[in-house]
Image (tube, rainbow, N blue to C red; front, side):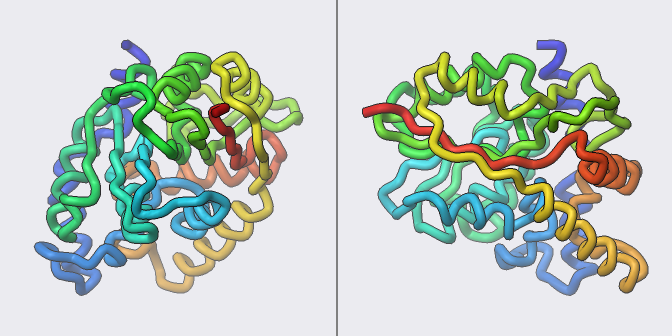
Length: 278
């Protein structure tokens, strides 16, 4: 529980909703009733933004009848995106109270409260009944989870037979070398648990899930950040609505440390897809 408290504290920032509303106003959007696309700058708090989200989702079969669970949902941006893309009902679960509270407010602001529901909870003790979810998604969450065996066990518990678990996490590469903190997911090593893809596959196998595919997104990530840095330089700073709102005043340092470690071959974002046997 100490680790989970540290993780929640890491992602907690003061008056998050107020700062988002002010950023929307600065960007020329309605701070009371923004369109879903107005929130994209903060909605996809992971490498590659919405493009990375779609790159994973496009490998999956999702319809309006698919019961979707997004674990580590943050502000619910990916949950809202899935609901808009497929018309499915999406439940999001996150450890950080301010993320869930702010995300629920954003759901109401964009008129999606009937299609997306966010819950406060741990990925190690999901607040859902077993065998009720067709698809579990997870974007950049495993780096904060030490007990990946329990994580996969919980995913297996809530998935229906034949269900899918699709994730996108930062993972360790084969290269030796220490990681330079802080990162977007951790200020210090005490609550950073970046492990190789093999650790995920082992945890999945023990839980009873079957490995389906893996994809290294290193080149995609480096291209993405190259484009982002160029836009920021050209504009003279980040856009008003951006993930820097979620990372306090160390956002630039955290992102640069991450990019440096990816360039050095120490870490990289990976996609992994698993299925629960019928």
